Image (cartoon, rainbow, N blue to C red):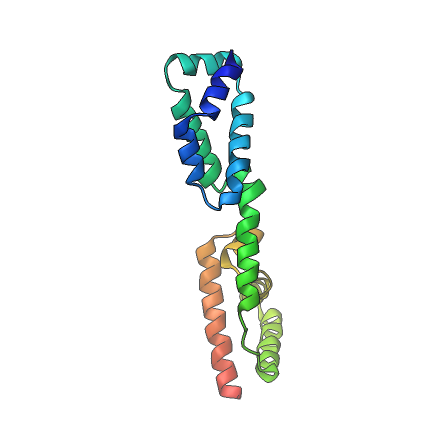
Length: 171
């Protein structure tokens, strides 16, 4: 009997309208199938209970909403995340990044090496800044070292200012 309930919800005009509102369009059929799979994995007694209380459509709407719009849902990870990553990669390919003056890069790099050898605080700043250059995100650096993001932001801001001042004075 559960399969009949699921079939009825699957063909419901409300569910169809909700799924057709999801963009991009080519994910709509995948979303419908994933919704059906999610319902089929639920215990039949629970489906019957929800159906008896006239709540299966609402329950299914919640499932679809979570799948389509939550960044932690398996549907997002399986289908939508790739869409966003492809879009970001495409936009980045269109950007022309400024060329870095090699003399300035050398000055900054030498200072970071010096900082590493001065004392623990300077070495800490140098290590965080080098990891920031590698990961390009204060949050990723904070997660990598398991330290507060605010601390990383403060150190990066201070080090950038120091390197900028040094490069201006040496140039």
